[in-house]
Every structure is written in C-alpha cells, then in structure tokens.
Amino acid sequence: MGRAIKAENVLGWDCSVVDESDTEVARINKTWAGWGEAAVTSAGKYVVQIPRRLPDP
Image 1 (cartoon, rainbow, N blue to C red):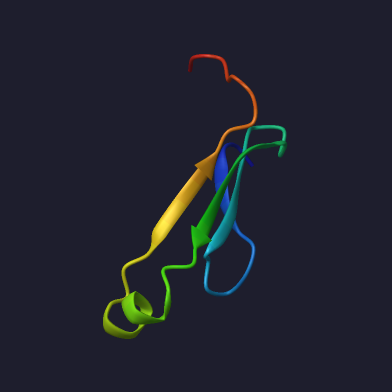
Image 2: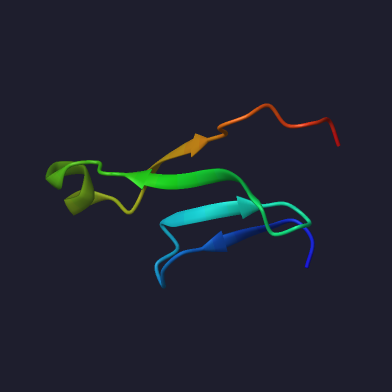
C-alpha cells in the first residue's frame, strides 16, 4: 500500500500515519476548541504525535 494517512472515522478528525509495512509511525488528533470557537468557526487545532525518531527519507 505504501505510506498513508488513515482516517479512523467518517469525519477524519483522528488519523494514523502508517509506513510501507502498514505500521503506525505517527498519530494526528483533533483537539477540542471549546464551545465558543466551535460555534463560530469550522477551524480546528490538531496535534501530531511522533513517538519515535524516524529515519530520513
């Protein structure tokens, strides 16, 4: 399959980043912006977590 970003639900707010062997190498999660910001905008804040050092491409 190759490298990919895989959405975990229909909205695609939480994703996993996988390498060529389908091993997760990172995660992307949408954080809660709060009621005020959510009511007036569709903008989101995302956190990227890379749990280990990855080799250069």
